[in-house]
View 1 (tube, one colour):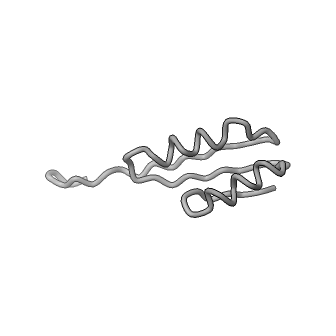
View 2 (cartoon, helix red, strand yellow):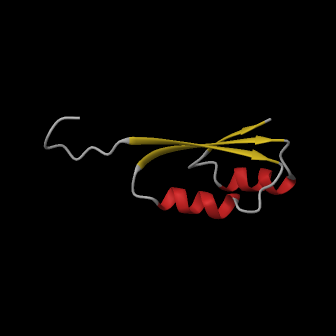
Length: 67
C-alpha cells in the first residue's frame, strides 16, 4: 500500500454452515454493516428451508454456495 492513500484492505469472510441457520441472519447483518471493503461467502451443506430463505434475502451482499 502506498503512503498517503486511504485504501482499505479487502477482507474475505468464509462461513461454513451445516444445516443449522439460527444465527446466520444476525451474523450476516453485523458483517455487512462493518465499514470495510469485504467479500462474504457462505457455504451451506444440506441447506434447510430457512437457510435458503436467508440466502435469497442477502443475495445482493453475500455469495452463497448451496451444496
